[in-house]
Length: 303
Image (cartoon, rainbow, N blue to C red; front, top):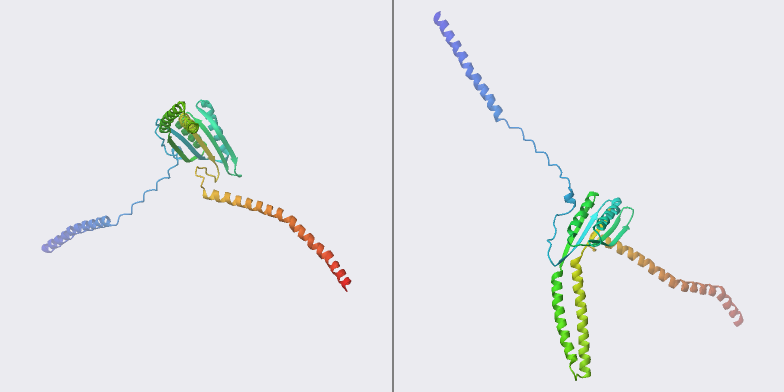
């Protein structure tokens, strides 16, 4: 009996002891299953926020030509603005020039044109002191951007006027030397009349070439003393620029010119042929009115 009880107790202990590992393995199996599960897909990063246009973007690239002695620069800017701000910005640019004084800035041209109900075209031209031209152009662009406008075209070109002046000086020296030799030949006694006339003609040609060369040199010196600058304005669908070969605009203008030319030609033809047409109608009416009577009377006379 005791053996039976001891055997039963031993079996019960073995059953209890074996249950714990099984439970542990089950827990481990569950944990392994959780780890082996496919992890959730990572969230996509949010799209980058749109970058707002800054004033620097609307004022064009910060590129300016390097100041070089003997180079004459020419500045051109084109802006697009709301129609109601074109006149205001144009007046602000003119006032900025007037504040600098005539010795540093002069207004050399102005235009303001209402193209249609929405579009306005305007222009302002200056002659500036070369030392302030770059800063004046930059300030003009900032004025436009502050007025909710933008720069649409910018062009800075340069001409080596210093080299042209040096070349003109060398040419002038050579021409003066040739003229001096020509005058020495004319001063010799005993020159024939035909030879004297030829030398005088050549001397006059040299004088004309010297004057033309001096005018060219003065123009180059003037280009170094003052810098031209042009502001062009446009609104609505009109975008100002410096390329005159706009196909759409040229096509519209050409169509309008053709229509006007054709209408004028038709008026000329009508005015030329109308008197003759009236004369022919009058002749036909006279023939129809009196011709039959004449033929009838003639027939009666012959019969």
